[in-house]
Length: 91
Picture (spheres, helix red, strand yellow):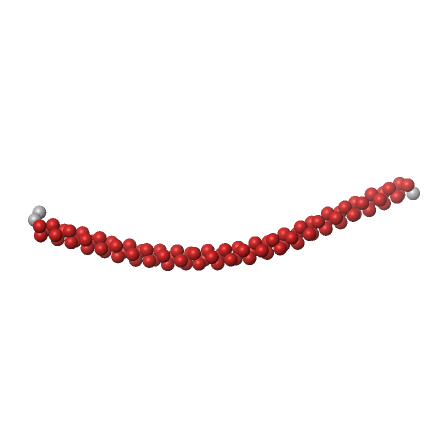
């Protein structure tokens, strides 16, 4: 292979490498757009999750209050039942 053929092959390979680099840059640009889109969606979902967490914590407080009041009410009903039973036995 003489010098001219070698230079032609080398130039051809460099052109191929250059074309590949252009394709890689285009692909990276598209991937960057996709990543930015998904980051934006993730940020929006994180905001929604924080709002849901706040709502859940508020409703948990209300649920705890209702459970506490139900327990107190049950205790009072049971105590009244015991007192009435004792009063009936001694009457």
